[in-house]
Image (cartoon, rainbow, N blue to C red; front, side, top):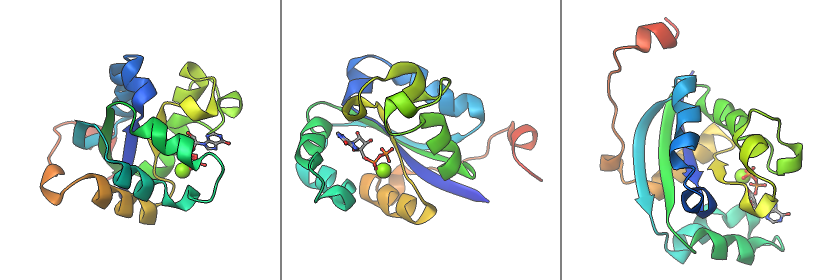
Length: 151
Ligand code: IDP
Ligand code: MG
């Protein structure tokens, strides 16, 4: 089932100059980039994005971190893109993230775990609408699709 999902390379990933290496993980898997931008986020957007965590003790710190410096927002498309990206990122807490995952290879601290990925198709649709205007998402044909995608 073709899905779209939202990835954020959070400010720690941009500051540590890991953007290229992180994007490479998704691209080499075969996922297609359909949206990509560097953004300095408004507080309201960060709060809306993490609204589900509003009551958690780390919410303020998390929002402060997300608005502290530019981040990279990416829309990715592919079969099971939501689950595939969660696996590429690895577990939320880096000490539980498998080696080979982004967090398992590059992160130590839960608050600086480099990446976000939507956790369901429904949430992905909401998050993509929050982060990208419709005209910023591109549907495009890839010449290698026949070698990567089903059918
Ligand atoms: P996810 O990013 O793997 O989906 P969530 O549980 O949705 O993880 O949490 C969102 C983000 O909030 C995490 O990626 C992490 O940066 C931060 N976070 C989660 N739990 C904690 C915590 O206990 N302390 C500090 N930050 C946390
Ligand atoms: Mg989450």
